[in-house]
Length: 250
Image (cartoon, rainbow, N blue to C red; front, side, top):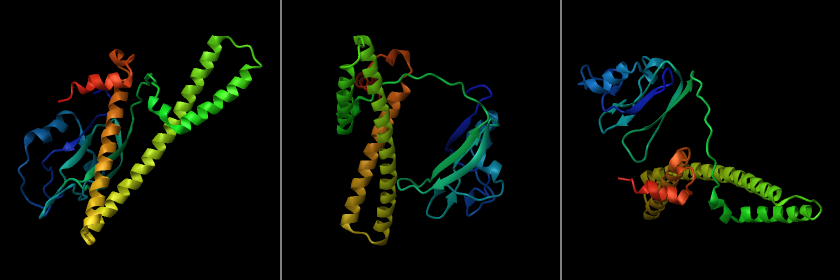
């Protein structure tokens, strides 16, 4: 934790703090373990939801005959609560809890290592745009007198510009596609409840597996990017980096 910086503690605490507000049906007494409740106090953190809504009732875990607010966010004074969103989960009896905060602490900007997304080299769109640029560049070179070093620098800059441009386009497409497919998954889940058929079950399972695979790949890429600033990894290509990281998996 940074000194005087924002601190957020989140998780499934498997207990409630207020038996009247955090549980339905409400109870007068509830055995609360000391460790989960003492930790936020020792770190000088407050329940983000309860601080904003001291009397509201909200639940994040649902059983057959009861509902509880077990999943909570605790924040310190360097964070300002904006809003909290609770979304249903298809894979758990706990809901998805999303907290939005603003930080009063200005983070120190860091420089990052930029690496080519070499996967884009195989994209037809990249090949076409690069070929068009090279044809145009060749015509311009016939009328100018640049030394080999200048030509090389110009080609490197153009390659990087194209990779950044297409990389943003790919991210935008994948994000939109994931949102659409996730909405379709929710729709299929509703269909299985309202009108269950073998085809619906099959379609639902296939889509769920595809989204899970996409999630794993996104997590892998995020892991690689998180290691890019470490000195021992800066000169390694992504394939070598992932191979080294994978050997440490449990």
